[in-house]
Image (cartoon, rainbow, N blue to C red; front, side, top):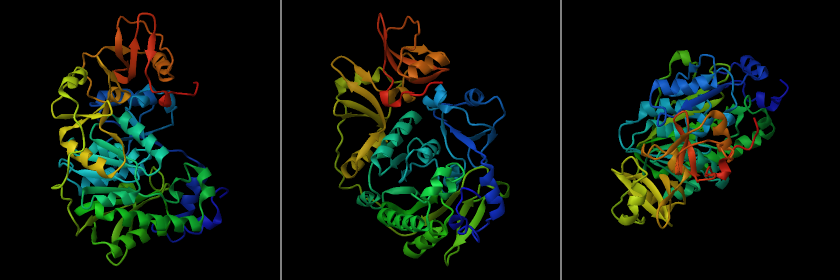
Length: 464
């Protein structure tokens, strides 16, 4: 093997289920697996799903077996030049990591109102997956400690279009201020990344035994810092994209040694070729994904239930959020399908919208954490109107009577470059730019020009 160093491959011998010869062959072959997960918020019937998939490939697609919404593509298209991608119709996600869905479906009542924390969430693959399967009454908190990555996370959550998500930019230890608060905690921990070497060969240069140990210590610190935020009987899902025992089985053992937990075994079909592994005196079960066995990259996941702990008391909670004044609410309401069970929050002249039952959550989180995004930003309140925000365009909240302009693929790409889409229309004023029925963003149509309001930071920079 040219690009996998011996000091790395030596660590693979003896790993559970490892077939080293097959593992090395699959890396040498350099095959690239492309998978995506469709957005059920926006593609609500099979016809809509097939229209999007057929726009990406003329060949028959296959399903990711452990995901309701996951598909494999035979070749990787240029997603940058697909308007459906920018409309949030799907998320390009590595197939192995979609197994989080299988775990959630087995261990949680997904019809119940859950408070879910995705602790290391950027760029947003697992968060968009979690949002797709939890109930509308649930709340997802997606956190990222690195500021630049938190911005990307916020953009991807906005594109997904859901209102029941809060994006935070905090160190894991900050969540200690909320003891016993979350029902589910997903920790896809920062790791040495060896599971992605086939997809990202350049990452091999950063691998070393010393870095593996540093990652293992960091993983323990993160789990220790955040442990008390999980309530009694709460669920911890721990995952890495590393093959190293120190980051996988040894962390499982460390969890069982240091916390009151019970491991939860997840049903795995033999046809999936996922390798079961065990660790610790309790023989807790974890799951290894090898690229020579599964159609996906390297991945590890395990699941525990917390058997003792606190439940957060909200008795002393004070209200810290300001509702939009009633006379201003009409400016917002005229953009929306309906306002039933919605809370409109005034944040420095901007209107944030989220489900009414989420107001107390946002109020509490705002007192203890740095919130980068909460719900859907509807827009800026001006003297006579609401100036709509891109987040509103990406949501499913807009009423059908809002003026719309249908763009061709070429016009859509011009719009997404923040150029004049060069469209002729009788529409005047604010209009929703759409491609194949899916919203791309706002434009304001004036008598002699079109003002393109697509966010500058999201625009396409490449040429076809």
